[in-house]
Image (spheres, rainbow, N blue to C red):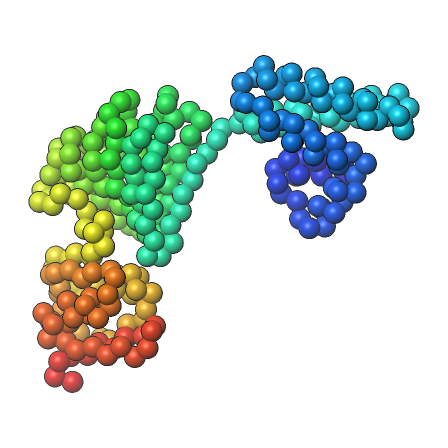
Length: 300
């Protein structure tokens, strides 16, 4: 790989082990590293950066003049300026903050305006932090609960639609084919398929398979914040899928179990969760091992 591409990949922290060895073998490798170290001492204002590169240019000349001719000095200065320009670009490019949660992991995020986001498991959130004060906008995959500080419009973008508020508390779920927005305080506007729906506190909107439904809710916050999964007339298959996801287990059950479940189970005690599911449906369970549970009809 040529020198210029090696330097570019080094600036992006994208060198393979072999490429790293090749970069470290470059005659000017130490000088490039010094440029980075010097630049990191300065603040983000433009004047400070310009002054630092002037100093670095002089250092480059003084280091190279003793052992090279003027042609090499000019070449080194040019190379340093290229690196400096690339560094200037990297420092000033858009700064993106991103967060991702794993299975059974929640994370609380404080945004630059002190808005709070509680990110549910298996979710991703991303926003442009360098421009946040001008544009409060973020991208969400999965589920999150928002407690938004009042101010300019706050937008949550998902693959299924956009949620816009000025300052309120709401929950957004955008996973698989389900898009659900629940408003707990203030007023939320949902935009989807060129349609707009306004949700006052105590209402939610569900978009499933292209059909949107607005309804009332009677809870103060989503149950997942309390480590609970709640169901209303849900199929047994749906309940088992949620149980497997929350506890990282495999549940074996008879295909003859065709029941609906209304109730809840907690996320931090498998025994209690299984009792909450099986007792109302007259089922029994056996914990085979740490990864497997068997559920049967009570008569079996």
